[in-house]
Image (cartoon, rainbow, N blue to C red; front, side, top):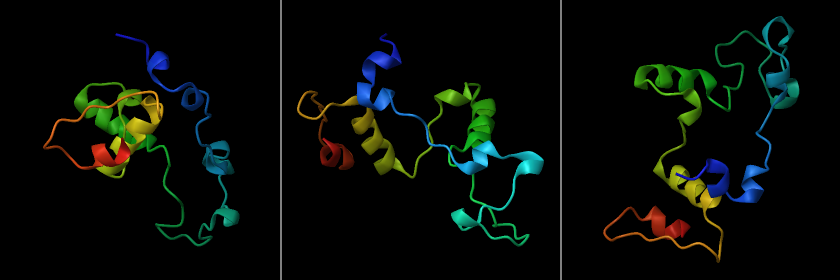
Length: 110
């Protein structure tokens, strides 16, 4: 099997992961980030959730007996298929084969 870096498009591999101010300030240093439209009042929904979903991935990994870094969480099949094409397929270079009948998003993304 090829290493993942050989399969991923080079421009994608070189991207830096998203970070937010919340990543830099945690624990007692975590304040309200008004520039992120966070509610300064002590309401249960006054903070944005972790965009990388670390806790959820960790729990799923424990249940499934796999490493958390092997888990992808997305907003449904459409997003997962779209990202798969964007990460691994080079437009005008790579080919994708889908056997009918299949889920329509494969054709949309190809």
